Image (cartoon, rainbow, N blue to C red; front, side):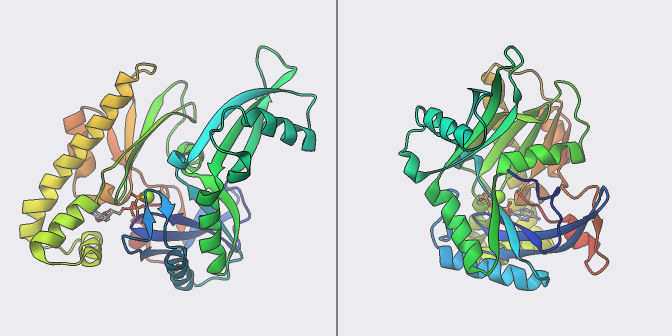
Length: 337
Ligand SMILES: Nc1ncnc2c1ncn2[C@@H]1O[C@H](COP(=O)(O)OP(=O)(O)OP(=O)(O)O)[C@@H](O)[C@H]1O
Ligand SMILES: [Mg+2]
């Protein structure tokens, strides 16, 4: 689990493989200042990625290749992520006498007890978080397990596009690392990030920069694009482009986009109800909205009113500068997750 932002960025590119598009971003850093150097969004056909699984590796790979061309640089290494729904995570305690290969073996032995698949079918990774507070003879270990097929299909798509896939991260851990860059991490404050993508809405809640709750619902901007496609005869790609460029007719905006904004808010409200009914956590102090559908006109403002809670569209590049060769307005519109 490596932070893209912590790496020497030259030659590295981050790739988000979503169900509607592949997004690429390349960044560099000088001291604590981060800069966006290049980005691209390449649409995917609806059959390429379904429920977070890559169904058509060659199609995704071609899209990545196109994206790399648009970005224009010389990229040797890529970072991708798997959705949190595809991973099993577990915190466990292991004696600190185990180090190196012995620790790896011990983790595999313990992992075998709770992973419901044969270990040969699973990619495992772990991180030593630190000594257990009550017993310093043990280390707390965070274990992440993912079906090999999920990780390998991403690696295959990236490698066939001509870049080495150096890191397979988990989307919620990328969000965890993003949080201190966009918000003040304060003791016990609960912050939600709601990703409204094309086909999935996910609610992720963080406390002290750690994910404490995560849930997905089958809902997303596709519902709007499909409705416009059926009623106005525009292709899904045309609709998505028109939404991004804000070039839909007033009739479609008033008759379909505005009502859909209310549907999104209802879905967010439903997700929050599930969170609160889980009972173990307190009140959220802020909801960040991200994903393509978070760009719906006035969504954050309306959501704040309806949900009676501070809502804001998340800009992961809030404190980043933009390479002078790039159009600053476009860059601010990229939504990574
Ligand atoms: N300006 C906009 N206004 C409204 N909707 C938009 C806008 N821009 C993009 N969208 C919608 O956002 C969706 C794409 O979002 P995103 O790129 O986050 O999805 P994804 O990552 O491909 O999908 P998922 O995360 O569900 O797998 C599409 O349904 C698109 O119509
Ligand atoms: Mg997405």
